[in-house]
Image 1 (tube, rainbow, N blue to C red):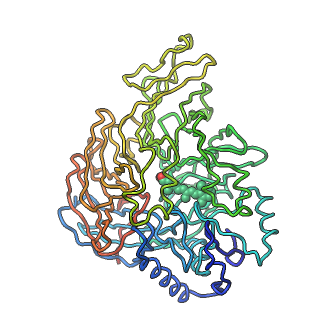
Image 2 (cartoon, rainbow, N blue to C red; image 1 turned 135 degrees about the horizontal axis):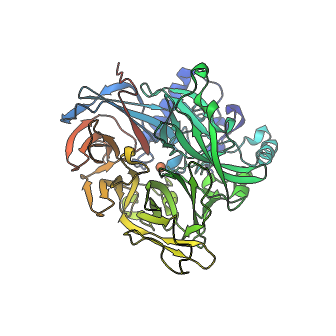
Image 3 (cartoon, rainbow, N blue to C red; image 1 turned 135 degrees about the vertical axis):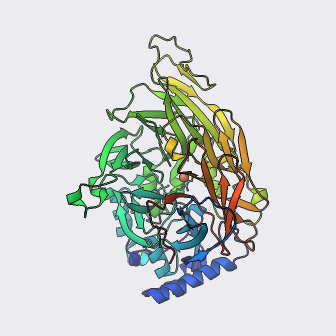
Length: 574
Ligand SMILES: CC1=C(/C=C/C(C)=C/C=C/C(C)=C/C=O)C(C)(C)CCC1
Ligand SMILES: [Fe+2]
């Protein structure tokens, strides 16, 4: 992390006011921080132009009892913990992109039919430095903060260059991860932040890079049946190589080493060399079946030279990502037992994707489902300047999120003719043998207009039927949530006027017999901020409402989260 005193902020499109040295601030203890935070929030909240996306949200660290309507299942006990950007304006400076906002954690605690809400900003080093300086001083995805020119910009720029990849933010705003008995806020850099899931307090910062040579890591880890974390990260130009590294964080450590963190026992499972040293693929998630790890190398890539020179060129990280629609998308399958990659080369046409849904094996094939796009317009759409008051009418996706199923034959007749389809399952997805021995795969479409997919995680890596997701049509507004049956392609929905639901989280009934025996939880914010948001509980089978818990606060639109059952974490509300 860059020391607070060494950087000052400039947004992507410099605002002359921000160059005013009189705005520079120094020092300040906790009360001062609070005062500044209040000011920043007030600034954000009073801004008329800001939509639900860009407005700063207040934190509510003390539990607030929600007003429950309907009947929540008595077995629903635990904490729904979620993460997402909550503050986009600090002092007079404003982030450019929605994904830049300071991480605001929030939780719904379910206990004896009652629901309590809390929210708290992640006290990352990024948050503390920004609030201390009363301006954005740490670079994020869409906003670059420069080293202070008065403090020897060239020495700093040189050190960025000599390290190839500069220090990244620890504003972990995307997801929540469980490792061992602990919970972490996650982003996509090498930093994660331990948090207290009950109080939402911020605890230690963990640098993955101390335990495994990665500069980036996904915010969507997987968990195996023993509760170990499996995650992937990118190691950039390390010892002359760029590779994708798969690693495992054990769920427990030997008794005599109990004081040590589970990260000290992190193991590298295997690594996959990048097709290109200076252009590794960007990825947001990866897939898992019972025997294989699935990594998709998409032609949406990071440009390392651009990243290494971003500070001196004054551009943001987002501008160091590029999509090449004429390139191939390569599929990699790693055998979880032998840790070796399947040698056959499988590929499909260029695509951009963020979320794997699920994957499984059937009759010698690997089947995997993704939400994919035909371009990278999704990231561009979330620039806050695009999300002004008329964005619902004006901003249209140029590519609709499509649920694509690929069926990849791992075992096939090696004497099959060139040009023949090797898929032996009932699917319109194909895998055609090419002259050079590579196999060209084409997908089957399962559905359209859905993002932020979730499944019953007990079915992760197994044959499954149901996807729960938010529905988006042609604008970046989640209007409904949906349940897609991957076998029949039927979809059922929940939606109400002016309601913007979040990623739906499936919670299984403890006595579940079927995949969809349980509930779906979604945070619903209202497009009219004067109307109170609520946590909605739906019967996962029928999508009928069981109940809702309304909280009279201005809730932020979030990204991802997890439900922690009461057996795992005590549901203290006092
Ligand atoms: C800061 C930072 C990055 C941030 C990426 C983010 C914040 C991505 C968010 C993605 C989401 C929310 C996708 C949802 O589907 C990069 C590009 C890895 C490059 C290095 C520095
Ligand atoms: Fe995600």
